[in-house]
Amino acid sequence: MIGVFDSGLGGLTVVRALMESLPDYDIIYFGDTARTPYGTKSSETVIRYALQNTDFLINNGANIIVIACNTASSVATPEVTGKYDIPFFEVITPAVDHSLETTKTNNIGVIGTRATINSGVYERKIKKKRPDAKVYSKPCPLLVPLVEEGWMKKPETKMIIKKYLHPLKVSQVDTLILGCTHYPLLKEAIQSKIGKKVNIIDSALTVAGRVKTYIEANPDIDNLLTKHGKTEFYVSDITQQFKETASTILKRKIHLKQVKI
Ligand code: DGL
Image (cartoon, protein in one colour):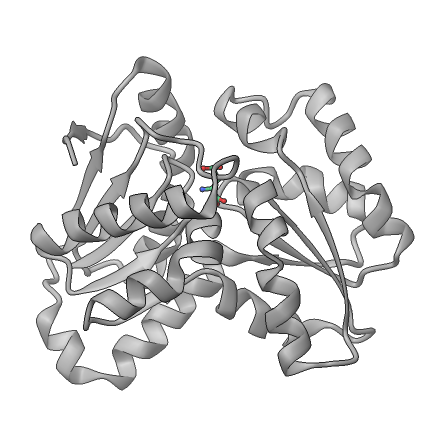
């Protein structure tokens, strides 16, 4: 199975993208709803959680792991990939590569949680591949709770997005990386505030593309993956709000199963 984990339910944007690009492949999802958000926590804590989440997925049949959470991808990738001998996909590298393919001016914007932006990982990866690129990063901590409240289309949300994006707009970025699981759900508002000429990179879509390419090129791994078009959803806490957020993201009702990890 393809294992996917996130700090909560935002990672369902990655599941949605995987279901579109690999509809037959079975997926096991773990959302750490009891300990969300990760974006405000220390690296040490996020690493510990990421290792526990990975253990859960592997113990329940995952043969490859997608770290859907940008925060966990930013701070915990070396620790999780160093511990297990199976293929891992994080959401940062595919988005960086895609941004470098699309930018014409080398002015790239990145938005994410505080932990992701403070880690400096996007900037480091972009500059390593293109030293003359200019990277403008902006933490947008209010956007996750707004999405979780279902306020995607509210004027207040649009106003906050406008304020967050203002410095990136002034810096004339031509490409903007959505470095957080929740931001694809605000894509329309983000596009309208940053300007329609700016290329938006959705890390959920890019990582799904990367997984597909990898599976096609590695039949030995492909053979391990079951293909009944089934997805199981596990979470560490269930509330009515979580159920609603999950349905909003996947655009259908899903059955969440609670587990202790
Ligand atoms: N999943 C997190 C991310 O992509 C956002 C929510 C959180 O802070 O846990 O960075």
